[in-house]
Length: 53
Image (cartoon, rainbow, N blue to C red; front, side):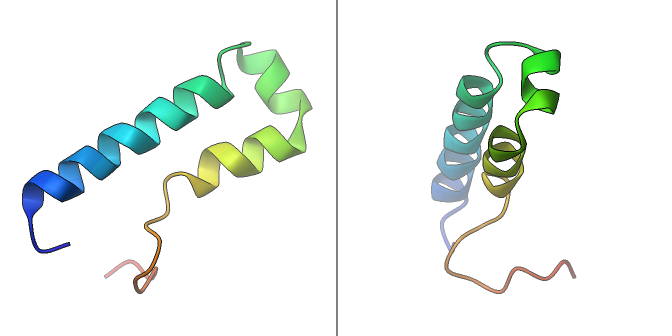
């Protein structure tokens, strides 16, 4: 994203999603593969090259 503020807002939204996915605690998170995938996928930027450079 060209505007750093938009990028920052996106990061905050991802953090919010991760917090929602993990609200039931570590054991619940680790016991549910779907929640694990959702939580980790929230960290990956969408619509752009997802390789780390």
